[in-house]
Length: 131
Image 1 (cartoon, rainbow, N blue to C red):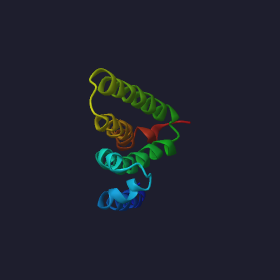
Image 2: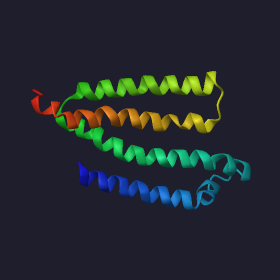
Image 3: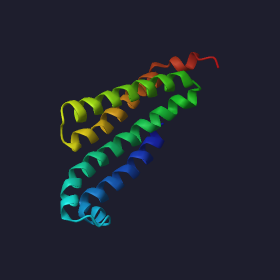
Image 4: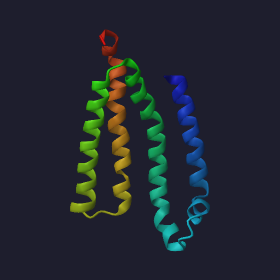
C-alpha cells in the first residue's frame, strides 16, 4: 500500500504544482476571458488539493476492495454520497455560499472515502473475512 501511495501522491503533487504555478495558462486554454480566469483560480486551487486527497483515498479504497469485502466499500460509498449530497444542498441551495464552498464538497467526499477505508485496513478485520 505504501509504495503505491508514494507513486499516487507523487504524481498528484506534480500535477498540483504545475497547475498552481501557472493557473492562468491552463485556464486561458478555455478562451473565456479574464473574468473567468479570476473566478476559476480559487476553484482550481480547491480542486487541486482535492486531487491530492483523492490520490490517497483511492489507494485505501482499493485496498479494501482487494480484501474482497465489497459490503464495506458499498457502505462507505453510500455514506459518502449521502454526506456529499447533503453538503452540496445545504451549502449551495440553503446557505447560498460561493461556488468555492461548493467545490469544497470534494474535500468532504475524499475524506469520507478515506477514513473508513483506512480504519478497516488497520483494524485487521479483513483478515478474518470469509468470502
